[in-house]
Length: 116
Image (tube, rainbow, N blue to C red; front, side, top):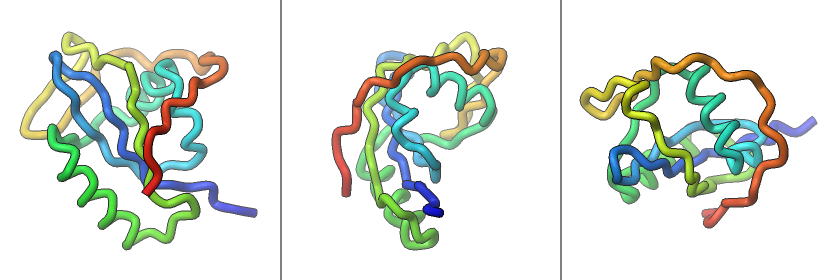
C-alpha cells in the first residue's frame, strides 16, 4: 500500500497578505477545499508560517530530503482567509482558537499550481 504523502506548500491569506505553511501530509487533493483547510488547521491548532514563498520552498525541500515522500512537493493556492479574530499570531506561529468544524466539505476544487 502506498503512503500517498507529499510536502505541501499551502498559500493562505492573512491580514491582506499571503502566507505559506509547509506541511507533510497525506491525501493532498483534499487541500483544494477551503472547508477542509479550515478543518485541518482547527485540528492542527498551532502551525509555523512564513511570508516569503522562497523561504517556504527551502523549508519544503529540506523536509522532502528528510522524509521520502511519494508525490514530492506540491503547492496549493487556497482562497481560505485565516480569520484574524480566531487566531493568535506571534513570531511566525499561528495558534488557532476557532472551534473544530464538522467533517463535511464536499468535493475539493483543484487549485494545485505547481509540482516540483
